[in-house]
Image (cartoon, rainbow, N blue to C red):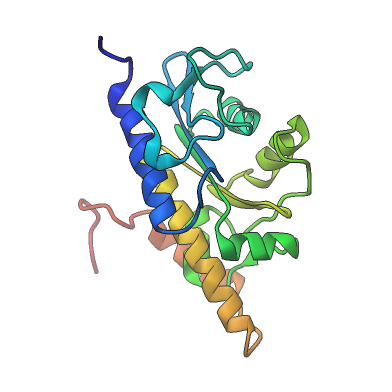
Length: 218
């Protein structure tokens, strides 16, 4: 019997396995989802990525109704709130990567020490206010921190990235962890020099055509 959305289910499994290889999640930490026709597909609660099967990916609506033999991730409300607030988002990645967690435990925003911060949509990557994991309050705090952004830190918890595809959202998760590590490395021996408003404006302008094959080059 064919399982609905087989390709999307497998993409969530593949990304979850790679996230453990890249050590942005370990074991059953973190979760991922993709928007579907009538809600979302989300990784389940408590199952390590390496033993996930397509039928264990949980289909559910944005109000908490789900089907299947396994429960959805305990953070389903966070994913749902993002999809409700952001029609542009079609995939969400939540991770507990080491350097993002470290910054989030200090409740620090990640400032524009590097031009790639602008790739997340603003002058910084915000750290959300604290709320208990799996709670409606955390979902609300995440949506706030993601306003006009494609990534954020979650206070004393981890990080969230979003995208138009799962590849976009997952790529941003890897990039955000790299930037967090580089920021902490710089702070270990000096205070990072931040890009100023004009420098950031120039970066944002270049990002409008970054990666486009049809864009003209100077």
